[in-house]
Image (cartoon, rainbow, N blue to C red; front, side, top):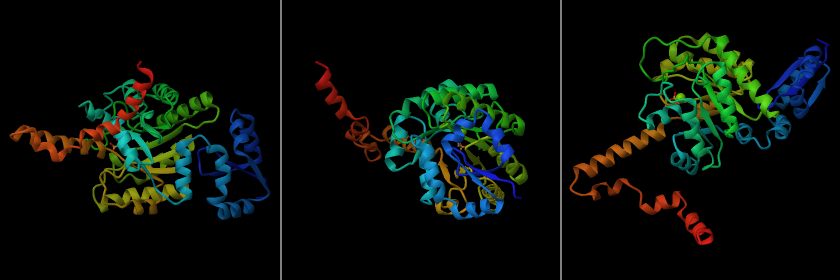
Length: 371
Ligand code: SPV
Ligand code: MG
């Protein structure tokens, strides 16, 4: 009990970790020491002081320390600032530059480059049919057309740990804010498809993927600003498997994930009980940012989700589904009516598209450079 304790404010995490002196020295002597120096370190002379400090400081006191390490890290800064301001982070699913821009304009805090939406826009099932490079190329086409951070939905890393390493490297090279990987086996099936019996990747196998991604990013970047979300599909496979969902998320946390995503396809309050039980336990045991995707339990309010401990929610697939509904309606009206004008109430004026694609910039550039 009288042993010295060191507090380490780890990057990317709203977390303080207790190290005994020997553990701390071991940690310090590894290549991780660079992060330690950046994050700062502090010595405490008793566990009681440490606990008192944790209780007293909770959020506010982390702020300064975090500010040192989250400069130039838009996603981490966003999550952290929202947490401090007790705000839920709203991440919107998109499938191209247009939907990304519209989401940003409507007030999205960040974007989700959605596998579901990419697949649907190619008229393919969301089942690992699109390759990593196809997904990367679609999402790259919009990350520089918006200013908010983009998280790429990378399914299961597009293969095993080795494939996940390349996935992480390529997305990091393309300057994404981070990626999300899920514990579905390859080839995955969309969480909402009725399909044959589902199996998750072995927990150790998935932990291996998380470590592989974190290690390669750390080695490449030195400052580790690429955010990794680990997502479990446990409740999708079996809604009663609360313990496994907890074990998995805690193992993913320990393996180094920066955020944890708990998915469910629960469609009623009864089925949601497992989801809430897992979230509640994870909030007690982990300090990582907690994410969810409320597609099927969409009546639960944002305030309730925040109250349940979620830091960020992914508003997935509403973009593509609203496009489909709008196009079905418009096409049916213009093909079944006597003139094109039957669709007029469904469409924006052409000048709205001109505004979105910045024809003004085009005109200015033409007058300047096209001589
Ligand atoms: C996606 O948008 O591709 C997702 C979220 O993974 S969901 O489809 O809701 O599972
Ligand atoms: Mg997906």
